[in-house]
Amino acid sequence: MLFRKRAWDLMREEFASVDESASLAEAVRVLRESQKKTPENNVVLVLGKDGNREGALKGAVSIWTVLAALDECVLRDPDLKMVQESDFDKTFARASAACTHTELSRHMEPEVPTLKPTDPLPVVLELFLRKKRGWAVVAENGKVLGVVLVADVYRALSDDMVAAF
Image (cartoon, rainbow, N blue to C red):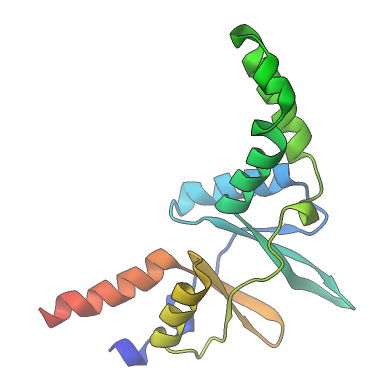
């Protein structure tokens, strides 16, 4: 069974996405909404225009890029180190608002791990291990078809492993 499964068998056709003109705040909102349906989702695809074609993949924002942005522009804010405990929440909220209303292009990952729909499961697994990401995009002819999450790969592999016991 392992070699019969392809990326299209694992992918989720519903995935979180935002337009390239969105702010980091919008990407965070979309990701949080997506996680209500799919708690293991940790990525929002950034789509935009490529020539005359709408919906072209421009990059991605993952939980890790959101955390890195917060570390860079909020947690390292010198004002936070100098405030009294009673003022900390207000200062943190102000810094967070300023950070998340920045352009998404400053925070997105432009290099996106990509699979073809016909890639077999071992190729999918190898990409996950090599890129050290918890997700990959399935695309064909420049069109995003879906997303595979590490939880999907694990489920497919563990199903076959348990069946072999």
